[in-house]
Amino acid sequence: MERPKLNKFQFEIAVENAGLTELETDILEYIRYNGIFDELSLRKALSLPSKPPALYRLNKICEKVAIHLPAVSNELFKWSKQQNPDNIAWKGNLVCSIGFNCDGDRLEPESGTVLYHTFIIHKELFNGFGDNN
Image (tube, rainbow, N blue to C red; front, side, top):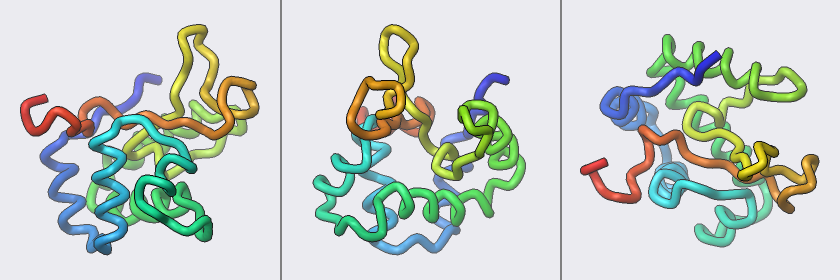
């Protein structure tokens, strides 16, 4: 199954309507600006405490946003389940997904490729180049 694509403008409206806190907005904007992240880099960049984990916070952000994008969210979560070796959908896949190296290996400790699960923002949500992408 190919990943369902998000409409950037509908996503922006959903974010506005999700009632995110300032910290949640900062997390989402950091991810969207940088494009690639893991638990440690996200915590360090935003000076987040280790509890709750930053990826848990991202999951909660995506739950809030998904309510305002029901159709595409449901499709993304079906796709997410297919991507996971344990067949479990992760809500964070609304905005990002696990990265892969040049050999096609997942960027995760279980694959022996990185120390932390490494995620990449979906291309249509990346805003590191400003609004001209």
